[in-house]
Image: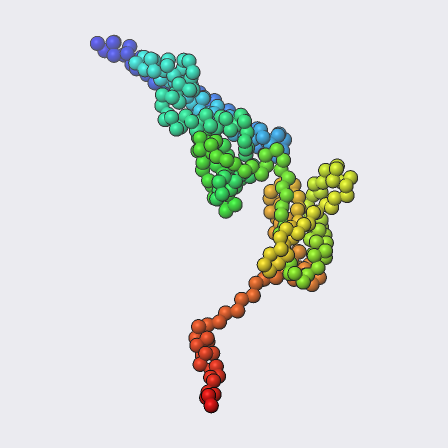
Length: 303
């Protein structure tokens, strides 16, 4: 009896050792793979690779990590005789899709498929500036298997499931061309010189370091101005002018727009161009009553 127990002890420890080795190897492989992806991501962020590769690398990093752990856990389960049927079904056929269908909800699967479509067709990529609906906007910070992370301009994170954002209408400021045309709208009084105001706006825009000349060959041949300034509307209180200023990207356009509003205002003050504002006369009800009491009355009598 004692000999049987002694012979059985190695068999008891044999299975846990195998499972431990498999899980340890899985962890090491996943860590090495993650380090390789992180190295490639750092090179891309430093400008050694193409900008759109950053989206692919981050997405693939998570997908490969899930696949490695899934394979390792499946082999570990396969080592247990009573669970081999489950392990065989996990490793056979569709593999990752079989696990997703079996253990994840339909919504989770749709998020994964949505993320794959986003990475393949690239309606947006990491570092693109998006506007969703009318109240959500920001810069794409990450795209993973489940959701897209957008950092808004208050440094808050907007988490949107991939299946949801795939069905949204997006405004992508970086799609195809990063250049942005910034509108500089200013109203002047009816008494002000329109030609002088136009000249000041053009000079201030052209002098800004973020401004770029976006004219094509035909516009250059026709002698079109670098900065078009046109009269838009004749308002109730002002003559409204708009300048078209082009910058290399959205952040540069934002800075340029704020700077130009300040510099144009200062030039207008210096050159005598008035920026009007409406005047209102406020009369209190009590004053009206007192005014009525002080009005002269007609005391003439008929003869």
